[in-house]
Image 1: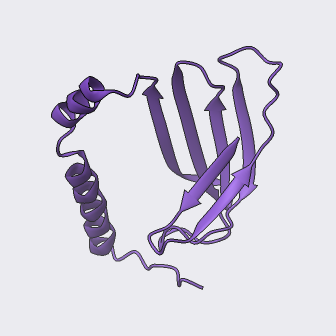
Image 2: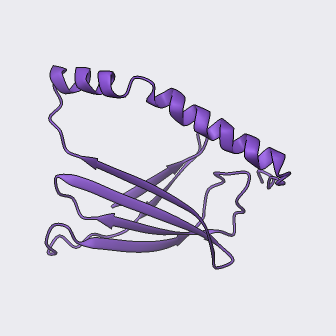
Length: 126
């Protein structure tokens, strides 16, 4: 399994863990790693990640927990289901999620404003 982390500067880092294909579908794998890429100006480079993923099936479930000094500070999740890629599913997604990008960008900026109002100091890029 390869987890690729990307930041807004276009930098990328991959975390690679082995998956034992002898396990049945729906097995949950976990993996821990030290943070190797500057992602957020509000989380130091001393953080660690705990990755959890359910083995491939018709659905995907992924969770990433981030810790700093053994304190849980962030959880990111992703879930989805397999669908055939054809004109109908593309049109359906365009109708169901037309403003999803705007929603995500708005949520990011809203949280940035909250951090700014709290006067949270960002960590330097280096």
